[in-house]
Image (cartoon, rainbow, N blue to C red):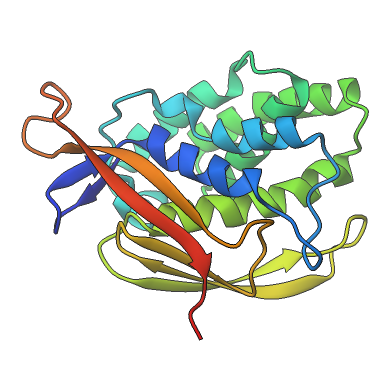
Length: 232
C-alpha cells in the first residue's frame, strides 16, 4: 500500500499495478516501439506484476527503498514476494512478464531468503520461456518497459514530487536507449518527456481508501490521475 499523508488516504498495491497496466496498454508510437510480445499478454503481465500483495495489503511501500536496504520490514516484504514464485494462472507470456519484474527486484536483495525465492522463480521463468514462441531477449526487452510503467505508477503515490530519468529501449531487437524523463505530481499527474504513448493524454480513476480504520474499515475515495506530456 501507499500512504498519502496530505490526502489521508491509502492506495492499495493492486491499484498501483492497474495504473501501470493502463500505461502499458498505450505504450508505443512512431518513436517508441511496443514490445514484440502479444499486446494483451504484455498488458496483462504489467497489470499483474504485483498480484502477490493481495487486495487490501498493509505493507507500506512508500518506504520501499528503506525496506530493500534492510529495515525491519524487509522480512515481511520477502515473505509477500515469496508468493510470486507460485503460478498466477494468467497464461504463459503474461505470467512470464510479471515474474520477470519480481525477479528484477530480487536482484537488489542479497539475503538467503531472497536467494531461496530466486531459485524457483528462475526455474519458473525458464519453463515459461521454453513454452513461449518468444525468446528470452524478447522478455528482457519487455521487462525494460515494465520497469518504466511500474516506476511511473509507483512514484505518483509518494509524498513529494519526483523526477526520474530512465533509459528506455526504442527499437525491437536492440537495446539502444532514449533517456526518458518521468515527472510525478503527488496523486495528480504523471508526465513523460519525450512522450512514449499512442494517445495524447490519459485520465485514470484510481481507487483509494481513507487511512482511518484501513483495512478493517474501507471508506473509498477516487483519485483522478492525469498521464500527459511534459508541459512546455
